Image (cartoon, rainbow, N blue to C red; front, side, top):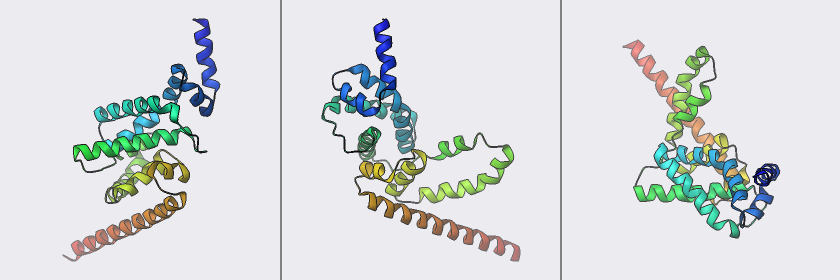
Length: 204
């Protein structure tokens, strides 16, 4: 028992690369990788599906697939988590296709959670602005929604995002800039519409 505890303690000090090398033959090493990335994978899948049941089911499949293919994993110089995200991306894409569902990233819970620590007055001030931003995000194409999810919520690098989305790092940068411009234009257009309606109401 002491040896087992000592081995588990040792695993926690190892980096991902060392654990991956051990994981092909050692389930406990894979177990440490599982513990490190379970929350990240679940959050990613949840934001792409919008419900806990499917998120739990797909997250379990991510790690089942990773464990069965860990022996063929090739280190391309990117973090191990990029490989896990790629598996999750493919599973979620298949889920959307099989279910015939509209692809929506459920960011509302994330936004609400991120503001819970803010003072009530600050929440009141930002609530309307946050609502308009979320509406604008939902109007974006699915790939641009996913890019924002990976960039701002998962805080991945452009190289990691490229690996997950099957794009070059340059293509990710370009898509990111186009996405920000599209958001800015959409928000400005909505502000103009709102101002015109307010003015029309006053005149009436």
